[in-house]
Structure formats: C-alpha cells, structure tokens
Length: 515
Image (cartoon, rainbow, N blue to C red; front, side, top):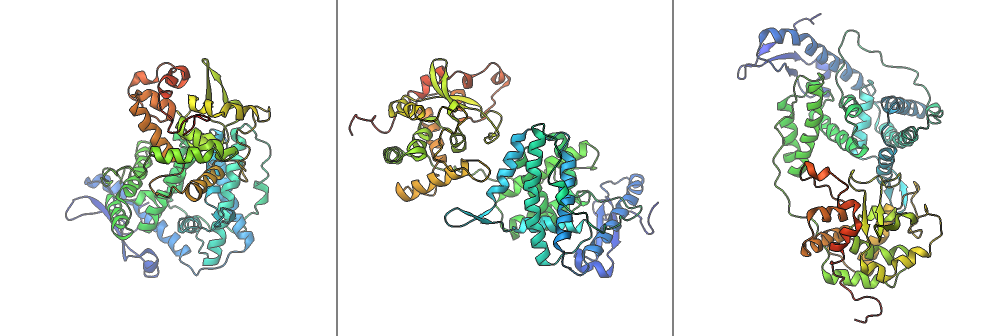
C-alpha cells in the first residue's frame, strides 16, 4: 500500500522522477537535512508510480532507524557487548559455513587481523586500538539494531568485535579443512535479552554488509579483497551519512568523490580504486536484480599513473649486503643471497620447509608451493626456481644438509614464529632492521626485501630473458594470450629457466676467490 503523500515528482531539469519527503523535526540533526530526496531513476510516469511506494517505505524505515539510533547514548554492559558480538559471529558463520572456500584464505584473513595489532618500538605486540574505520563499522552495526552506545561502550564493542573476527576466521579455517566438530566459540556468547522490533510492512534497506555477503557468496573473493571492499563501502557510508546501497545515486557518488579528493585530500588513485571496487559489486547486484542500476558506473576519477615508488638495489648495495651476510648465521646469512638470486618474495622464502629444497629435471630447486602458512599472493605463485650457481658455490645446499631430517621442518628455524605460527612478519622485521641499522642502506625508496625483486627483473632484462622466464622466476602473473595457459610452461621447467638465470652475474666474487 502506498504511503500518504507518496507521489513521485519530476525533476525540473532532468525530467527524472523522484520522491521528496520532509524529514521530521526531531531527526533533522541526525540525518543532516530537512528533506529526503530519492531518485526513482526513470522518466516514465507509470514506472515511477510503481517504484514510488517502495522508495517511500525505505525512507520511512530510515527515519525509524535514525530515531532509534539517535536516542541518548547509553552504556553497554559487557554481557550486552558480547551478545552483540555473538550475533555478528553467528551471522558471519551462517553465511560462509556450508561452503567456506580454501582454508588458506581464512588463514590469510586471520593473519591480516594479527598484523593490525599495535606493537611497541621493538615490534612486540601490546594490544589493539580500534581505528576510526573500526569504530565506524561498530557504530553502523549497532545503528542497524537501533542502538546508540556511548563512546566508551563503542570502543569496547569495536575491540571485542576485532577478537570475534579472529575467532570466526579460525572456525571457518577449520570448516574449510572439513572439520565440522562442535563450535567451541558459539556457546561462549550470551544471548541478547531484547531485540529491536522490526517495523511492520517496511522494506528493509540494503546495508553494504548484506550486499557484500551476497556478492562474496557467489564470487568467492579472497578475504583480503573482501576486507578491502568492506572498507570502501564503510567510507561511502561515512561520507554520505547513511548505509543503504539502494539509496545511493550518481549524485551521491560524485559528492563522495569530491569529499575524498577535496576535503580528505586522498590520492586520486585511492579514490579511483574506491569507486571501481564499489562499482564492481554494484554491477553484480544489478545483474542479480538487487539494484536497478549501478550508481558508481563511469564516475571513477582517472588517476595519473605513478612512476615506480621503489628502486632496485644497485651493484654496490648488493655487494655490501652479500658480503655482510657472510658474517651472519641462520636467516640473515641466507636471506640476502636467496633474495638476490631467486627473485622470490620474502614471505615465500621465510615459510619454506626443508623438503622445498629438492632436485627436479636434474637441477636443485626451491619448490615454491602454497600451503596453510603461505597461501600465496595469486594462483600463479607456484613455481620451481632453480638454484643459481652462486648460491650453490656459497654453500647453501651444505646449510640445508645440516638441518634436522624432518622434511616438514622449517628451512630457517632461527626465525621465531609469531603467535599464529607464521614466520613472514618476524623475518621481514629482522631483515629490515639489519639492512637499515647494520648495513646502513637507508634510502626510503629501497625496500629491504622488495628492492631485490626489482633488481632481479632488471638483471633478467639485461640477459635478454623472455617474459615467460621472468615470470617463472618472480611469480608474476602476466597472461599474454590463450596459449599462455597451455602446457606446464617455464614454471615447470627449472632446467630451462636455469639457462637464463645462470647468466645473471654475481656482484661479489665466490668464497675463497679474493677481492
């Protein structure tokens, strides 16, 4: 049934029909305007009359939610906080539990959460401080339930929600491994005593979180991508002042874009990513009849391409590090040499197991394969990197032979793993401090580990290695044509790759050669 005074009116300039409703006086401060206008996206009067009732009900539902959330802020007890966290936990688990996807994805998401913990100057974990984005996410979650929490309670809830995310990631990683034993976390959350009643007859808004869950259920993005897109939609809700994707119009997107560029002084590339990310989800929603149109379409700013923000190491840098590494042991003894002669990512090297150093096609290799602790940056990261003659001459295989016989043992046991059993971040921290403080390479454009990859690519260009060989060494994804996916490719031919890699010169003479 149409609401009273719910009549579409035509925009005097564009001719597009819209709904205009006066904001109740008690909600003007909360909503930030005296009138709510929602475009119906059509110039056809008959179609506008059909769309008008649903639009009016959405606006009325918004008023009802705003009235509840705009009430006096009140404290939440710890029991209430944990009950709300339990609702978030159960909803998330319900959305993904039946088909959680690969366990590595949830392990990567849990790792991403771990890296957001606050650390002291020595790199030790000291706690979690909710960011403005975390607080906004918590506020929107509570507002959807008509809850206005005071500042202290909001902070407590945001911190508790962070811990809840880590719990759900751990549970879904177990589910992904086929473990559906009773969930130890679900029973730990109390039930909330009072639920805000739903408004009878009102079509609920479409919060971005709900849209993202539907999109993710079909598209199966990586946890990192899902988190990134969630951040984009939270920024949209914060700038526009509402969390309902159905309400977003192209004019709203332009307002969002201008605010990010002009008020927040965001980089155009960042804003371009924001709008393209949101637009990709809304395109899917349009195809699946959840939205009438994509409001983000063709509105992303055209950001100028930046010059490379990183420099590769030159011969002098490389020589200083390789020579200095000879005086070290364990990880620092071999990290610079492996980074120099393999082009691998530091996370790939830090998580290597003893069995990953083996022989294939008659040559010793590093077998870079994804596993739980190292899910990989992309699907093409798996490859076999032949060992450069300089590595063999330096004694790397002799080092491997000194390790315990367990094939699943770490290749670098000197790296102390973090609480989740991962070694990539401790390895990065240790190497970074060594490069900056001991070797004294302090140029900010030279990253302790990543600049080796830049150097390797330039070295491969110098020896005229073809692009596919370069990708087989570095693990980059560069599809060129349909034929690129045929056969095993150079990633599975370490003996052929070695013909080019072996021509990359060493910046230092071999051990015992003097100089």
